[in-house]
Image 1 (spheres, rainbow, N blue to C red):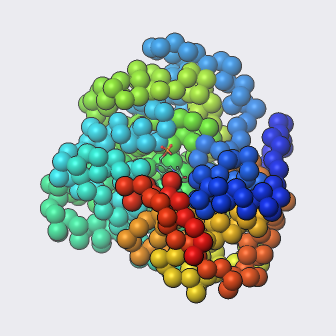
Image 2: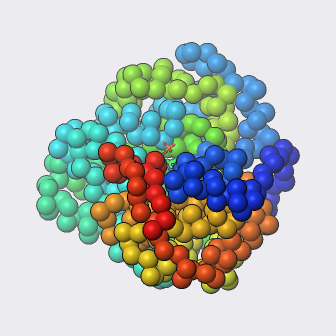
Length: 446
Ligand code: F0G
């Protein structure tokens, strides 16, 4: 059941089919190049695109814009202490700023970093320090149809195999991403968080949680892990963090803001080092590249994220979209994750070869048929890997209504009706760094 109503609205418009086709052609069949005003329902990301509450907007007026020692910072630090249990916090402009600050302090050339799955920017910041990121996803993640509940888990055996290979001295940090964005937004269990903490302790490494979607993860633990059904999401959230030494956080997800992030930790020495790096890259450590008002919104958003019924409502809406799509016969990754529904383009277009990007073809088809913008996370975004050709439909928080979900499902159903007519795409222009090509490459129908 929706637990909010609209207080402010933003008009959206579905351009005509001709306009959509022309926009797609202008964009080089890459939806990152579309003008947002040409998009009817924008599911490109759940990051910074959600709706803030009246309380958040009210708090923004209180923003203390002092360069140093602002009261807004004190309020954020208090929220982080209450909601997440960390003593030391440094605000940053967004999640990747937090990664830069923390990993710049913790990693050196030649280090190796295991993670259940690195998000792209996390991977890039590990590499930027001269270290090697290694993904250790649960084998269950590979099956899009198994109904296992915690497919986002870290594979501890893979972690120990890595230790065998590179030696424990090479691994100063172990990371766990909750929920696991790169594995269809799947959650990790508390048992797995405990096991990763133990693994890190065993090899004398720090345990860092990538906390972006920590409230959604806590919700899944409450729903599906024995022993947690009677605990509140707030209690579960705190227990998740009780096992970790530090976190990086993108406030644009579960702090319910349009911009902002932070890193937080228990160790004072790490904090002091991180503050120096924050000054270099983000700003004085009580504002970290944000205005006081942005920090206020984040302080309030963090508390809202763990206050019922926000997060059950949120995750239910994502599941609702998954159900509507499944009812239309659209193959979706099961179970649906916390922030997005992932469609299997390989199954929708089995006749399109991988090097003609079935996922990107599906992204374009959804836009052409219904003005819906998703994102490809398969062979186009991750060249040279054998990832399945998934398309992510990420739902912004507290933003769209049931009628919007119905439109999305109907659009996908329309594409399915003529699936065999689609031929795929070829790249005609791409940037030198292939890893970043999905942001700017241009394509053409085959
Ligand atoms: N970690 C995870 C798991 C993320 O999903 C993201 C961002 C980041 C770190 C970086 O945070 O964007 O604030 O710098 N994910 C967005 C997405 C961009 O669309 O999944 P950021």
